[in-house]
Length: 386
Image 1 (tube, one colour):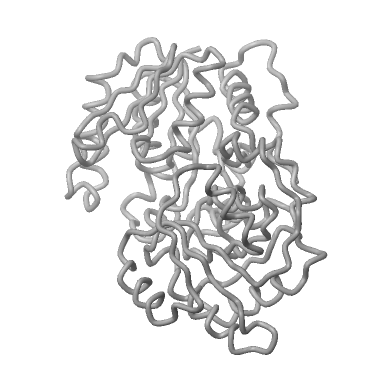
Image 2 (tube, rainbow, N blue to C red; image 1 turned 120 degrees about the vertical axis):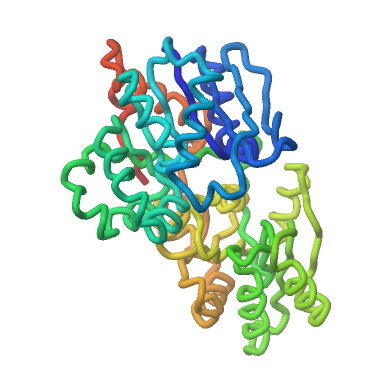
């Protein structure tokens, strides 16, 4: 079985790298086609695989984001020129539109079956803002063998879109809920001790999507309440377009905020997690959010976004979902998470389901089933269950 992995974002996504590495270690032959926007991205996330060949191509132009069909045609011509598609058995497109469009063209020209994944950019970008792509999206979905979602909230949001509702009865049986995995380090260092202080932590960049300024405002509101005067927020990470606003907030309220910069070592990050009581990341949009699970592995209840990321994926004792645009909701959620030390914990989480080796096994069985291969382990075809 040879798989063509089409992944526009491979060079910048550890999620794709971790999955492809696991598949490689299990003997799966793969070609990864990774078009990039900048030649500096070539080689990004590369790994030494015994059966994996990675093809980087500096083909994406700045204007492509405005002309979907031009971009798709340019990438398709480049892909068939640089990848020998004649011996590919199945294609896995990492996104519905950008990657799925290429997979669908391969299917039409060569008859190669394909599976697709739906991500936040597919809904918030293409479905919500680019009606010129809708007809292609419908055809991609109708002809896909499987349609993967990494969160239940994302799947619900997708089902509710008025364009998807017109074909939902034709495609829903192909939906599979299969979340991302997290690094084995966190799964091998599960921590279950509870903390009782008023320390909140955020880990991520400082983009407007991550909503750090509103989170900071909620912390300041909470500190005005009796019993929460000592609440603090530790920030790990940084960069992106709200950096100046976040730094200004930190400098204006140095007693409330602590900035540690970026932390790359997993043991250091775990140590920092264990010095806090709650993890908070009320992103505007979040396809999954690996850091939620990393924090949960250290027994930090999490504040996340309703209908985004991990919402609906786990038992409600892991945390609270909020409207990310409501500082009042963020404040109320923080208040409860910091106050209730008995209900919220990671006790109900089966972390084994988030091990990449297990997730790769599930993908392998789906590939085999799509190809009609014998000896498919059908127990691995089920969607994720809490």
